[in-house]
Length: 375
Image (cartoon, rainbow, N blue to C red):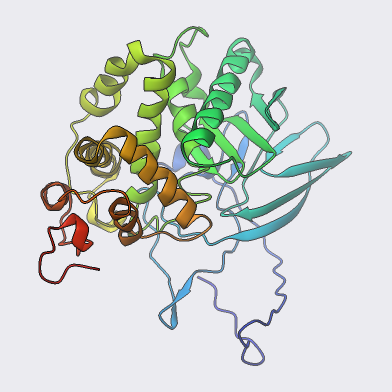
């Protein structure tokens, strides 16, 4: 944490420019690990710079919000910012980053408005392929040995954007960059997703029964749940990861209905059991495995339980309404339940009790007007 003392009090509505001159020593990929712990790292083929710069934390209730970093989940809460970034790269190195790109030789310029984070990847080996559909340009950056399937990965991202734009709201940028990295997993950033090279292994370019397809869909959905609808990823991580997992399910139900049982068995039942309460902070899970069991798997089960109780079409309407109401905000559990209450009067107390560790003050419509409910 870096504290900057201003020469005078900064009044509301006023601005000040602060310049930092710093160097980042990027660690080797193999010496860092766990979900979220290695999003700025380097491997034999590329460098990934995720959360690599100084970030102004949220200011709420009269104080700066300064959560402790732990290598579980995504230990960040990112408010909106407009990014203008210039990257001077070595000769022969390709840069991949979110936003509108202008290249002048070794200088790569990016403009990324209304974003949660500016990330980039760099490699001398990237093979770059591009496609455009319905006003969005998709760019895939991959290592040459995976060139044969890069179009399939890019096509998956395009289909996901088309689906989620119909279900939730329009994709917020002109470009989506899908970037292969030396990391072992996928990661979401504003206008860009990264997919670990290990996830490409074994995929032949046919069908959907593979980690690279499911991961591409999952990370793409974060452009809606994390980027446009922000959340406190430290204290309420279920508000993006559970919705991203649910979006995966919707993708398979829409495009690969015969593979839904495979997807459910592989990602919800097969690898680890769905267990744990979903409304806890990242500090409440002993390790990444427990975090995944609760937030990704049980979080999906919670959303399915709500959907089953209110009805599928009603739940689709709820998600669209919730997305519109929380666009470019830091959302809360109350905001989600308020959206549910605008479309349903089903009693959700039993569902909430099954999946939440803490008591929740539900809207009166969702709790049979129990004493103390929210109007």
